[in-house]
Amino acid sequence: MLKVDKLTKIFESGDQKVGAVKNISLYIPDGVFSTIIGKSGSGKSTLLSLLGALDKPTSGTINVDSQDISKMNDSKLIKYRRDKIGFIFQNYNLIPNLTALENVTLPMEFSGIKKNDRIVRAEKLLIEVGLTKDKHNRKPSRLSGGEQQRVAIARALSNKPKLILADEPTGNLDSATGKVIIDLLKNLAKSENTTIVAVTHDHAIADQSKITFKLKDGRLIN
Image (cartoon, rainbow, N blue to C red; front, side):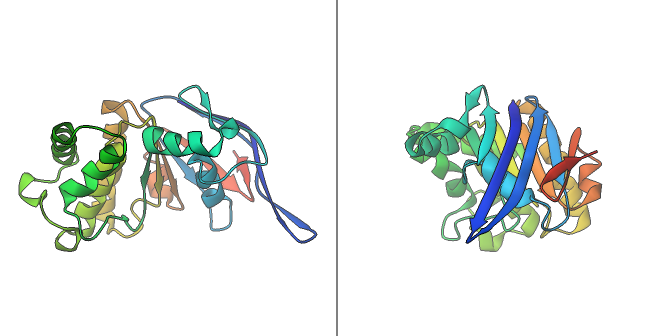
């Protein structure tokens, strides 16, 4: 569950104040695939950074799984990002010298999960996202863009997060592969009971989501 109330982020530069996110309130229940859509400069990236605890709001609250992350100190935020959030990026951001399996097990290693349990869950997740077993030990350079994004999605799910944030998850994929990835995210939101928020400028993706929020000049619009 994600609940945002009156969220505002103001950046200061000299005497200038710029409101990147302005008084945003929204609610997304567990198990729902949702999108935030808007043009470049609408505030999408800033909002994603706030939801992912990569930046702190000027005012307002962000509740994930009934935890108010806007009031956490830095050490608690580190643990929150590790245990409660999964990130999916347009450029996949896989570690090139690790195999697909190793990329997925790595977040679990940081969380102190036993090696055998890490491997079992990583293999299960890779199968679940549609990466056949013969590719589990391949490094990213030997995988297609769609396959790399599948690995990135499995990695995002590895620590059973309550919230997954996807930044233009189909931006580097052809339209057919992009549709497959969006269908996958929609199904995983239900099967993993995870809230998924995809930030995009693509209306075709937004049309497939259960909830769509439109952002313009830092504000939600109808």
